[in-house]
Image 1 (cartoon, helix red, strand yellow):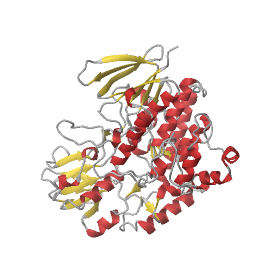
Image 2: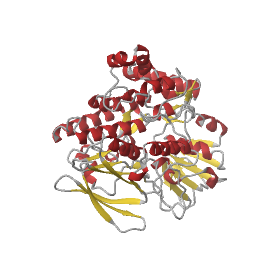
Image 3: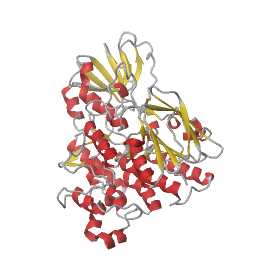
Image 4: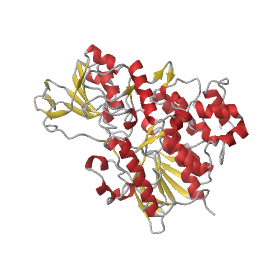
Length: 510
């Protein structure tokens, strides 16, 4: 009997772990990658005449916001002697090492664009694709795993006069380095992580940099390091599970105040830390204090003469460039729109929220379309790579029949609707919050179904009480999901000890 054939679209972090998991479960993967490299978003790509619209949106200076300890795959540890926060080159190197270790490259069709994927009457999928220099072709697959991420298609605001403004206007997707804006007057729109990064970087190169806060206040800014250690090391299983939310909010505010400082008067965050995606930029207030970076409110109008007017009635002149750090649209040009979000469901939500709404059971499966899954389509508070890996493990376990099939379509709709209600209750209304998730809860929910959840009594029985204390109070990482159940890894316990500084930094590889 032939192996089930699985199409994997994208060879970034999610695609690589899907290939690896398909091989582990005796499935036949074929991965389609539009570029000539692995690593997806993390493969730095210049914007030039040959590549005017690259998949990668990272600029030269990008450093990952989650620590290596939280970001590692569960059975292939990031080397313990690597820096806490990896530069994009090091992230890409890790994925190359992962692909080499598990021999994934032979299963990837590089320079290949998927044009269309359609479901057939027998619930298989016809995938049409074209490889550079070759004719268009098609192939039928038993399952499709979509791994193209959600940082591909820039989302631009709508301001009066955008069509008349004669200066440079680009989305942050196309920003690469500050020297391109040397001695220019630049406005950055948006106060998320990209907007903060770019504004601080440009404040040392531009003649003047401005950052626009579209909501009228600055976000709560948190540091990468607290007392010399990554801030995410503090968010242990015990902290996330047992510390009440109001106490967590209080702790984060104290950390922000004592490490970052206080925001300028009138720009204090209105939302609690738990009500929005965190913004990480330690030196932002320092740049404000020098005057090389100035905060402005939202734009009301762009003018042909290069001036910009703001909603508070102020105006600045002679602006050379505007960079829109305003997020991304969730789009899949090779799929019918109804697959990722039922068009009837959209009517239940207001215009801004539904702009990026996805309607997926367990954040992966469209209720009415079988045998397709979206991997990594979550804006996680924490590292996304371990969640993508657990999602891949879930999907292949489903294909192989190791876990129960989905409930009825109405029950799947109910689960999605309840999840969206929770998101709307917790976060302020914005397109960016439609796919929010939390590191430990999201992975735990899948691990329980798979039998890989770190159950206390089993860990204590198999590994001892001291290891369980590290799982409960130590650095949160994905090794804990390889201690028990199917496809456990005998190096997981040692990796937990090493990452928590209890043993020499020698870890067996899977």
